[in-house]
Length: 125
Ligand SMILES: [Zn+2]
Image (cartoon, rainbow, N blue to C red; front, side, top):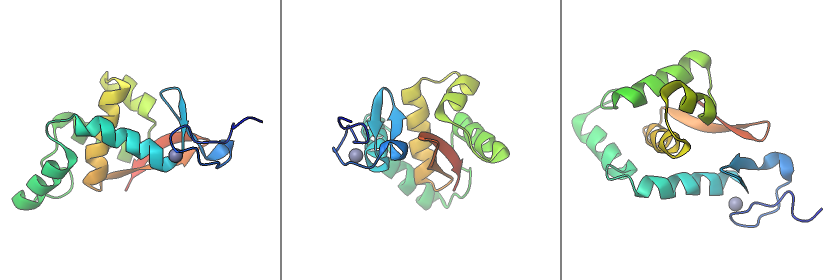
């Protein structure tokens, strides 16, 4: 086997079943979220300003989220987990847009990523 279980981000050898398939790349969890982070950096709103804003405004739960973010959160909660593909289909978002929304929800500690059968699943925090 030539590096089948290797993360294409950092080269760590984790074994195939531990890797997450993300836009054609096999990544460990860390690199997966690193990719999300890089997408998020391009987001003018950003994770940090979003959280600071929420803290300053004393917002909790889904308060202060955009309509789409709140709906994604509701979907994930009602189904007890949803894949990025499902969310993309449901809301007509591109994979990058799904990652962006997820990154914000994740940093608001509403949802988190979970590996299920080598794929990423978004589940309630
Ligand atoms: Zn990695």
